Image (cartoon, rainbow, N blue to C red; front, side, top):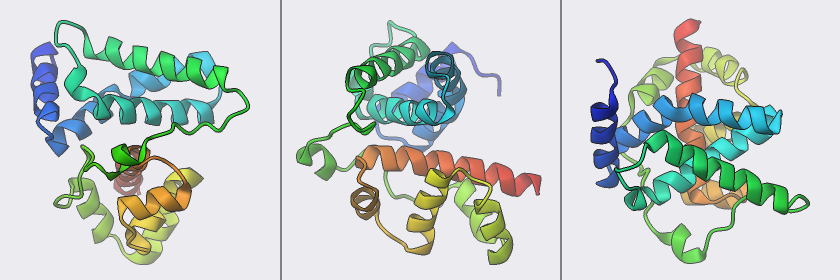
Length: 187
């Protein structure tokens, strides 16, 4: 399917109604745009990845405030730029965003749902090969995969264990599953 503005608008509408696959599509489709924009600004892959995760976390949390008169990519870049500016202001502070207890207790947009195609691929692998493939991921992705699939922790438990907002955990898991599925397909 050719992706055009009309398709993207459809995914945004679906995301506003809580459609998990729409969030996954938006994350995958716009990840490189936000990531590359931040990489030029920060010159650090680690900071870029953290800022990009926070960007999608914040965007998905605030998706209902997105106005369709504007370009979605521009909205994401603006969120990303603001997160980077905030981080520069808090240079000595942690790179994590703060969330209120009320926000963390809400059921977030990215819900525990039926297995995704990535989950299916991951489960079909034999364990030894899967562990080798997981080792190819960056440590922060290895950690969330390990906590979610091997220790079977909930999003809330992972959030508490790694001391990050639940939305960041969900975006990291989405990203980790996609990267792991790509590694599995190549090998």
